[in-house]
Each structure stands twice: as C-alpha cells, then as structure tokens.
Picture (cartoon, rainbow, N blue to C red):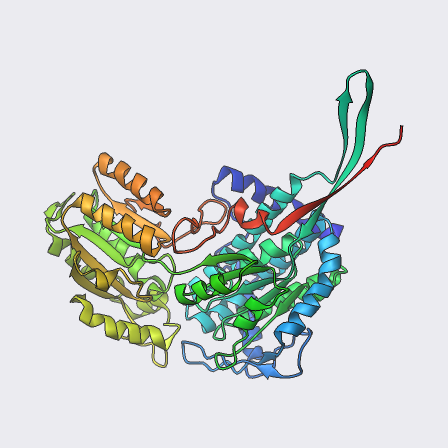
Length: 553
C-alpha cells in the first residue's frame, strides 16, 4: 500500500499545489501519441476493444449468475457485450462488508490506491478511447481526450481535494488547558476519519468517464465504497474502470468489493432501487433535470451531488473580431453535435445590430455570419465527422426535427456526408425574437441553437443571466468592446452562478472546462447542486470521530 503512495506522491503533491494556484497543469498527456503511450498503443487499444465485442465481460464480483447489456454504438456497431448481473441488495451488502477495512485505512493508503488506478487507466487510454467512442458517439480524438486524459485529470483533481481536506485533520494531539496555579488539564485526543457509507455513482451516456470520475474518486479517497451504475447505453468505459480498480484494490490487500459495477438495461433499470436503498449514503448523479428532481426528492437523508441540464447562453454586444467571433461560436455549436452540458444554445443579439472591426453589423448579418461559419467549418465531410461525431440517442434526432418549427431556419440540420450507418446531424440554427420564450428557454439537448433578437445589449445580458438563474446554466459567453458592459455582465452572471467567458476568438471555446483551474458547475443555479471540483464536493463525504482520555500525572 505504501508503495503506491510513494510511487505517485509527486503527482499528488503537484495536483494539490495546482488546485490552490489554479494554473495550467495536467498529469496525463492529452495527445494520442505513440511516443508518449507506446508505438503500438493505438493498435493494441483497438485490438483489445475488438476482442471484448460479442462476449461476456469478465468481472469477478458478486453476481446473480446472469448477464445484462445491450450497447449499440451510435456509429452502427452492435457491441454485443454482456456484464455480470447484480441486485441492489447484493451490491450494497458487499460494499458494506468491504467498507470496514477501506474506511480504516490511512488517507495515504487510499490516495495511493486511487492514484495507481488512474495511472493504469491512463496507460490504457487508447482502449478507453474506443470504448467511449462506441458508446457515446464522440469522434475518436475527442473520445481519447475527454474520455481519457481529461477524465483522468478530473479524477485526480477529486483525489487531490479529498487528500488536502483530510490532511488538515491531525491523527493525534496532546491537549493542555492551563489551570492557573493548579496543574493543567491534559488530554490525549485521537481523530479518526469516518466514511459516510456506500456511495452510488450514476453515469451518463454522453460523457461516461468525464462526468463519473469526480464523484467516484472523491468517494473512494474519503473511505467510501462505490457502486457504479452506468447508463445502459454506455457501460463499457465504466466496466473497464471498475475492473482495473478492483485489481488494484486486491493487490493492495483490500476487499475488491470496495468498487463494484451495477449494470442494467433500459427495460430493467436498477437506479431507483439503488437510490432508495436505506444503506446507500452518497449519490452522484449526472443527467436530466426530470430524473435529477426525482433523485433529490427520493434520496432524503442522503448526500446528493448533481449535475443536471442547463440553458447555456452567448451574449453578442460587439466584437473586436467579427471573423474570429463567428468561427469560435460555430465550433462551439458544432463540437460533438452540441451534446455537451457546456454547449451554448441561446445567442442573444441586439435587434439593432452591433459594432465590429468590420463596421456596424445588423442582427441579420450577425446571425448569417454565424450560420455561414458553421457551413465553412463543416464543408469538408471528413473534418465534419471529426468535429461532430455521432448522435448518441435517437431521441436527439427527433428533438432536432421537432425544433425546426420553433423559428426561422437560418441553417438546417442534415446528416453528415460519408457517415453511413451512423446517427449524425449538423447544427440547426434558428432565429427568434426575445418574446418567443417558449422556444428558447427550454433546454433542447443536441445540435439546436437560437439567435435571439433583443431590445438592447443590456436586455440581452439580463435575459441570458436571468435564464441561467431560473433555468440553470453551466457556461455563459460574452462578446463586447465596452468595458462597462463587461463589468455589468460579470456581475449579472456571477449573481446567476455561472462561469463567464469573454471575447473568445481563438483556440479556447466556451465548451471547455480545465481540471484544477475551472470550477465546472457552481452549484448556485438549477444546472446542478455541486461543483466539480471544490472542497465542498469532497469534505462532507467523511466525518471525524474523536476519542479523548486524561493523561496520567
């Protein structure tokens, strides 16, 4: 156990340092390079993925003996993988039995195990890229980065926060209270970190690792056993995670049931039974507001951390680079076909137009420039496939079709040329008036966006910030040349509890969230009640029990 901690201590120390400095750092290289991961790593990862297809997934954990699973890739491949079936009672009982040894281990021992799990996952990043790609529909490069190193950084970030918080608590102290001329009162006090209990991580289909790793590793590091309940359409990336985790736990001398997989199908879901199980103490949920509301309502007495949906906005009041602004927005609308919790949906533009480096531009010219930039970005089918990826759910395509009637179509959505056999859709861009709130104030997940005519720049800011406050938002962006407007927007969006990006025209996009530096979700609006990641995300996952005794004279 000590060997794992000692091996990775420098990485942990750097992660703790960076969560305080908030600068750039990454423990896991994001480029899928053979020079970094091994010259055969790409081919090995693909071969290992293909070898898993059409077979039962080997995972030695408590099971009924049955198998479940029905994953079909958005790119058209039937994975045909089945996973050991379990029941909520079986999984929770095994977790409780495993918690004794894990909860009593030192913070260093647990951190060492978590770091070794992440290290081994990182070395298999090409395998994870294939698994994420063929369950989420992300294009390969995004699946490698977001499903691999970026997700691993998010897991390490949670471990760093957990270790930092636990390190503040001394294991033992001698307490002396002066009594004037009398001898002081002297007590020996011991402080023990006590885990809350079995934790449940409910994964999503679009980002199965990136969204699950913060809660998974925060609970593990603080001594809680974890049951991972993947989305039925994206089981494999989390099954691989659990398999690697169980191997490391066993090598470290712990009961591997500290980490378990609870796979299910849409026809026979386990989520509600797990959420309401009396012995589940912590729940991490990523998903829709409707089910998120059900979780919060029915998980009374449990710790619940959620990331739900939001209506993300861009406000355009002016720009120092019309071309750069249009191109940046076009990429943000297109990336992974808008299937990101950080993707913008609403673009507020004053109906009287804006000032730009190319002179005054009318509302129609601004809206047209954005639509044209999308066309240019996606003009090459190969590039379009790499940017857009595939559409994870059939329901998203249906949503796109229904949205066409909500406004004036500036750019229609079409399938991507050459992506035969895959679900695909380019961005649908609509123009509406600010009065048409029924059209744009509802989250319409997927490649759907609205360019909204407002009365003024101030009206645009107020509407965007107001929708964040009432409907939820994870990101917001502003384009402006007036510093007074920028200050007003900063105040409005801070009050709405949403991160603001200003005048992005280069290689940084509003969709992106950097581990160790950006606070992903604030917990301050309806888009989620927690932040990935801050101290509040980890500190309540454990409590402190004390023992004190007088010191003999």
